Length: 445
Image 1 (cartoon, helix red, strand yellow):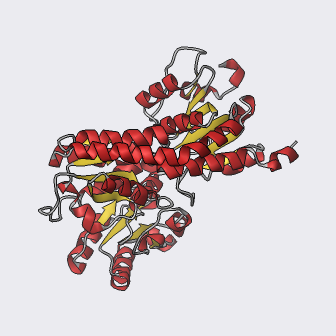
Image 2 (tube, rainbow, N blue to C red):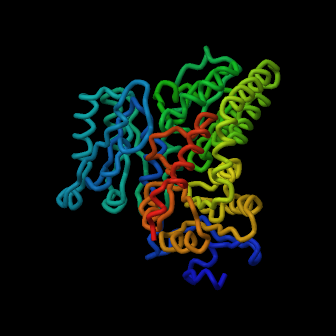
């Protein structure tokens, strides 16, 4: 590891396959001063909850916390557009000194009357954890007066990482699950979890399952509706993608309602097909479900494979770096990039667990850098050392890649292009090809 010249305090969170024994340290707070690419607890909670389109989302804190709203992200709704707004109580200095509960009550009272939401979520930010506003009491009072669920989301940013925000959001959702009528839900039914309908991806996934003869009760939470979430406990199976964001809720529903869950990925031909087959295998009492799944896979692959072969020929031997939120997503990314001829020489995540990194190690080639909770300096250095042609990440990594003269592909929630499913894989290959083969790189020094 000496040639990597990493910070001493970060050494246990960086591993180069083949160089030494694997002892990855993870699931801990970021190193102070390293400018982590991670987001805060509040960010994690709103990533999960904001796609619920008929709910009110109110941030209790200073206006700065509301600057990064969902409207700059790609979660789509087939109906209500209330999720595109980020309301804030805009706490000032005097509110922080004397408390913001009255201001929170007034904001909820006004916003609920104007927008008529089916539920409201109130997000606690850092300052609320410091001054001690009792947002639960305010939410209970407003809920009784307005007749809708008003739920406090304990997402004070300083108390953990983005992963803790996922848990806070799941705890909030758990208060809604179980309140709806389930008598009309059949046995061939499921919930889609961890799918946020970026660029309409949830609609494609839902259509696959419906073609298999399955009923989709609720989507957590892309294009989500409060009514569907309330009756989601009537489904026979939870299908969990991006397990870091939804595993807390999946475990809760298994313990309380006896609903099993399986983990899937919808990215890339291999994992998309496996997702359909795994779900069909769960409903094996009806053989027609598997038969329809096989037909879908056959038709979809035949439709895109000729074009994928052309991209693979052009991209053969190119090198990629990936840095994503959850390590589970990285597994599919490696497979998808290999299917179009590219190798992954740097792989990292913000919230990976020990078992995730062990799996990542087994998937990667010798010499690959694996990193937990990276910072821009580390990512930049390794991209240059590994002569990376493409960086796959989110909005925070885009400027870094361009400054280094490296092609970039957005795989985070800001994108406007669907990458899930079979059409999504073709979109991904097309975007990678356009980025890597762009003539602009010929002008770089």
